[in-house]
Length: 285
Image 1 (spheres, rainbow, N blue to C red):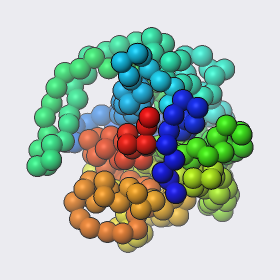
Image 2 (spheres, rainbow, N blue to C red; image 1 turned 135 degrees about the vertical axis):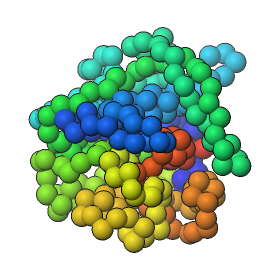
Image 3 (cartoon, rainbow, N blue to C red; image 1 turned 90 degrees about the vertical axis):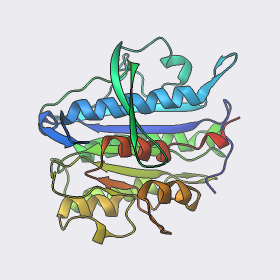
């Protein structure tokens, strides 16, 4: 399970859900720096897209190993955030040369000894930050379920590596109670290919600078005694054992069963978490 080879004929799917509600205009301290939540999230998502494209690059060009969807939710709507909003899934060759802009950014990279190095790079921008309105998370997860079900149901994807969903949020849903959110999350996790069930990973952007970061917890006890954080834990997938080695390395301590959720994590850790949640390069050919 979770070992299917990824190829142009058998791609892997990624669905990224971004909370774009009004509270995302607030600032949060990440890596000892104050940054607007919406900008931090856009930065992380653009880095993940760039990483997926980098994994797809070969001498002859880019191979379409991935189907990538990015949906933003705010107010009463859920919409594709691609340059062409009528497109849901995009593949690497669709994205090359189709970015919105390019900007110079300072990028931090964590070294094996725990230290970080900073370098200046030109980052391609496919997703821009936005913040406004309410938080229609239930609507977003319902749309995610529809996309994921259709993708898993396609004959060409029957043996594919199962879809991975990242839900990046900072606040409570405005359109669904705990029961409805848990129900739709369970429905998403119930979708599968022959290689395993879809993985739902929640990234909780918190303004609580006093709390220690939590990455891939083994139990709810690692999270603050907060209803919404505990709900996101229950909604998240248990990570397959194939990821354990990378998760243990990121957390810095041993464990066996991890949930796909983070709380109050540093920028470098969030990037690492999303890279772990994305497919191992060893599966590409």
